[in-house]
Image 1 (cartoon, each protein chain N blue to C red):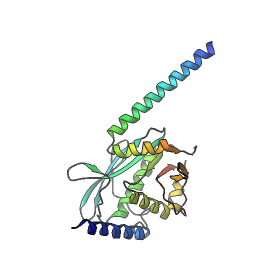
Image 2: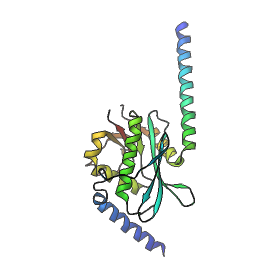
Image 3: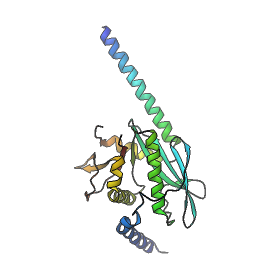
Length: 178
Length: 53
């Protein structure tokens, strides 16, 4: 397939995803999650059972700034490698997101003081995360304090997450409310 | 004189603690399944003015 066609399909897919994000992720907070295994103190695995079975990994890694953890989320590929760039299209995005939310809740129940930061593997994915947080802000903020990293006049600053913000955030930081 | 010694000792302890944190963080990043993302996030946080908790 020519590159121009691939790019065209990618753009159409992107617009579709952005436009329908609210519908796609509707009710993901209340959706029954997949059961997950806690491998280590900060690593979880579960299997997405959609069109095919895909093993997923969620990992919390301590960062250089004290109290901060990175949230890593990706697929285990057929070769056994981990990829956070795979577009699974497994037809169960709501259930997958619900599972990730439950895992975050589990991890922060054990470590309530930590701050979890995350961003997409691409600018587009970060924008989708922003959309998800915007959609579920009312639910999320019951349990979590949500902030974001935004570039303001050339400086990167942590700001309170504003669902009406039309600008793009670079990353997100959540912390369980005690 | 005694105060100076105490301050120097305190600074040394702080430096050691910081070095331990850096070593632990580097080890954690290495052991992570997402080392690239961890590195990227560390860089982003280092450049960011964070809100005090």
